[in-house]
Amino acid sequence: MDDAEVLLELRQVNKRFISTDHREDIVVLKDIDFRLRPGEIVAMLGRSGCGKSTLLRIICGLTPVSAGQVLYRDQPVTQPVAGISMVFQTFGLFPWLTVLENVELGLEAQGIPMVERRKRALAVIDLIGLDGFESAYPKELSGGMRQRVGFARALVVNPDVLLMDEAFSALDVPTSETLRGDLLDLWLERQIPTRAILMVSHSIEEVLMIADRIVILDSNPGRVKAELPITLKHPRDYTAPVFRRLVEHIYEIMTTAAGEPRAIGIGHRLPSAHVAQLLGVLDEINHPTHQGSADLSALADALNLKVDDLFPIIEALQLLDFAQVTDGDIRLTRHGEAFLAADIQRRKMIFGEHLLKRVPLAGHICRVIDERPGQRAPASRFLRELEDFLTEDEADRVLQVIVDWGRYAELFAYDYHTGVFSAENPGAEPAEA
Ligand SMILES: Nc1ncnc2c1ncn2[C@@H]1O[C@H](COP(=O)(O)OP(=O)(O)O)[C@@H](O)[C@H]1O
Ligand SMILES: [Mg+2]
Image (cartoon, rainbow, N blue to C red):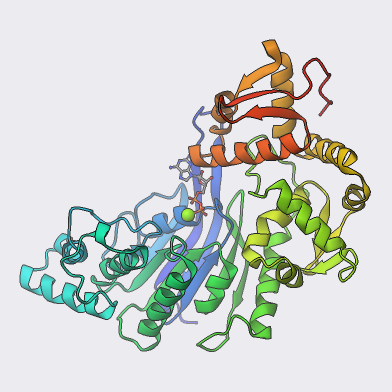
């Protein structure tokens, strides 16, 4: 395709953040190459934390790259650009301004006269389905309506390129489906002058409902893992077999990590999966209908889960070496089989052994507890360590995961009220990692 047709180009974009202790850089994005052309909706799909928001912030000029370049119509982007606007996940509205004022804001920055500002804001408010809410304040609106304001504010400047950062994920399912459908209609019917849309999301089904092309991002560091065009016609039916096959195919690409098994560190983002969910999925794989090897979407159906929700559970099972994913099928490893065959007490032991062997954070917590007087350690100590690798929220989330897993295995005890870890059996030797 002709280069002149490229709206947006990323060349070897890299992003590093300095860790809080300055000991090492965290590479968030690595060597991202990408082109966005007029007429397309492209979705970047990746797990939470893989760098999607960072990438969008770089593209719209809010965050600098560490290396590489972003070009918009062949011009380097180093600060916010008039032709690119973004819809955020959490609406980012000013609570003290009305809907109309929130929408007008973007135009004010461009120095557009008051009369025209008002005219354009009212037009876009009408277009996006906010008619009648012009003088409402954000707090008076439902989540769906607030996000409509978010869209109106992004669209009022007539952007060439519209970026959407998980723009539907904060909404409940029916609301997000309606809003997504409305946006798609505006786009397909050319009611908005936007020439290309780049969205990021962690939801396979969501991106498959809209995108013409999907770029799959890997995590740690975030880089392009695969790319595929989606030629399904609109409106798309997520129950159609061809749609389900695509979900499965993408799922498989996402779960098969390049170069696995990779050594993981203390700051590894453990997937959010409860022990109860792990047990549920293991049982289901072992169900006679699957005979130890289940098709991923069949498994999701059987468990009444969305495939997206199955994702962290499968990741955890792989991490613990209880299951493996090959060719879109998940099967038990011999450890998974041994685990299922064992009684409750023996299961806890096997689980604990795998935790200590495969999840460094588990062994670390055991050792620290053991070394400390009274065999107790406050959660804050581990949070501080995790924050060298993760944001505060992520550190908190990861610690909750290990608490759930470690308590099940009886590696340690944890008191939610005091936030203190302690030895499960005071005086007993902790197992060696
Ligand atoms: N300002 C920052 N300083 C340090 N680390 C950051 C910063 N912003 C994001 N990160 C880290 O970069 C990684 C990617 O974050 P993000 O782009 O928000 O991911 P996603 O949107 O895919 O969930 C995370 O590990 C996050 O902790
Ligand atoms: Mg994000």
